Length: 572
View (tube, helix red, strand yellow):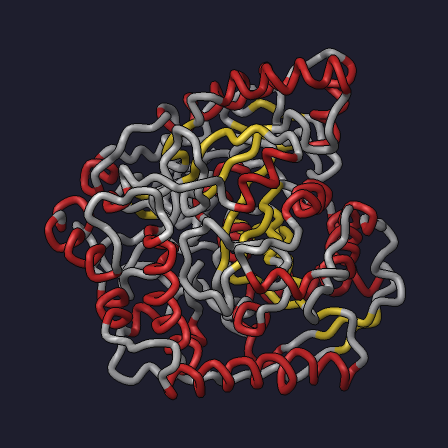
């Protein structure tokens, strides 16, 4: 979750660093200790891997891994044939996590693994043998972002030391739906602490609990955020898929930075009950996977009306039981796709070139490209004001609902904890956003009500809905953002350009990012977004593009970008 540039576009009296960033069984690592332990090795011995349905050409990895880029359908096929069991899949993925996250390149993207995962997998194997599989996710290992509550032996902390020891009364709706579908909850992933809603000078992928997470494509580059660990873990083949959360950019941005597929659903399609919040008007959980088919399969398991989240009532009759039904390789034919040039292009020539090539490919595959369209939405401080008000109210509601949370029941308690434990929680950046939010009044305040109305009007009826109606569009496409910048714990995140997540995020509408290519080895993603509840159409378009392009390749865990000669050997 988090904020984008548009949340700060007026910028009066606020940190410029904040405007640059799209909101974007492990031991607890202190911040300074985690950074001191970061290693930036080269790619190591490269081993070619066979091309997969979601992956182009010859791919390379620093580890020989038999499940490299295996899809959910392929894992199911392996379990049907007897080649694999769910327990064997869990063993293989746990070994992978140990080799790459705790040793090897030390990506630092898994906070803890589920101590019951092997036992759960074995029970699912017995169930498969006696009664058959429950569905596409039966026995499939999936990781959860560490702000999604589970009522088991794993913690749920949003990456903060303040919530260690907190106990959820029950599973989040998302966790329960995955368990009901037969998935194995493999562990909790690192993230930008508090979903990147603590400091205007933060480094995406850093948390007090986990330290700085790394990008598997280039270890000195940001994994973006806030669902950093979910994105990097999927890219590195730690699990078949993961769940992230987004307020503005926090699924799509790290997915793009780590060259995977991320689906940010319409707000209300997936319940937020049991998810540590930022803002109920924008928050949602969603799937992150290596290909569109896998993301669609996971999304199918997540939907449903939930009495604990009133927003889900609107999904009745709109949610689909099986989103994989919309995987049409010819889905671009006849689709009308708009390209908003004025605000979402122009910050990176390399990014523009990759997205222009993707647009040309879509045209070749039969899409009608409307270029340009006008989607120049100016929200001023309204979006940020909404987030500040809702964060205070929503976080305190979540904390009050915990079975136990030693000493932490209010936002003021969190702020006081951070001050008391500043050496662990604030070695690099502070908590100015939390302090700002603490000053806000109740949601009945006129400032909040006016800001929320402005955001909804400008992004919905005067924004996405208007431009799509004017041009009879099926979707809008834009760069998700440029190549990921360098990790910078001194100054905070560097800019990667663009703010294309904002219209759909603030409107509460769906978006999907897919890999669009690489610049000097660094991933670039492209986002499809559109009207509320248009996930089926967006999935169809994204899948058709993915199948035509065959862009994605696994990461090589390189030291840095594949730069031209600069006085040192290039990463191999």
